[in-house]
Length: 144
Ligand SMILES: [Zn+2]
Ligand SMILES: [Zn+2]
Image (cartoon, rainbow, N blue to C red):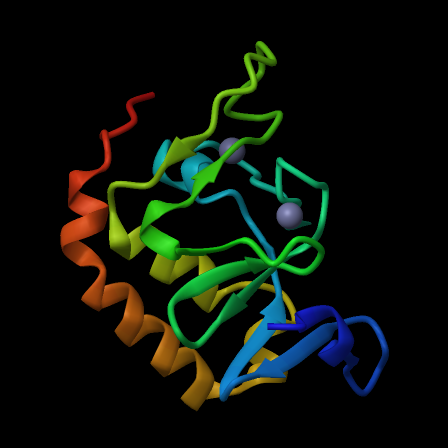
């Protein structure tokens, strides 16, 4: 894949993207979708790290996340999230999202991404999220 060698910086230098094999990836800077699903107040925007290696996470218009460092790649529907707000006891558990609408919302308002990537890119991602709907629905619903 060689994602790392293809990472470029955007115009103002504070966002990163990469095009690999026709897939356009953007570094994600977004709210925790689990917290949004649980209706937590004031959910901050953050970068996301891959738990296994600490590499930054990118999101592609193939409907997958990819780690910039180890290049682990996984469908958005199958990804688990940990953050200090919904895991305030620090249990280190990674929760999946059972509602595709929540991911769609979080990605749609993600800082920098949509502005940089543009509406056609966003629409492709939203279509992929919709295609993954059956997988999202298989995830365990999280309750507040
Ligand atoms: Zn969270
Ligand atoms: Zn990694």
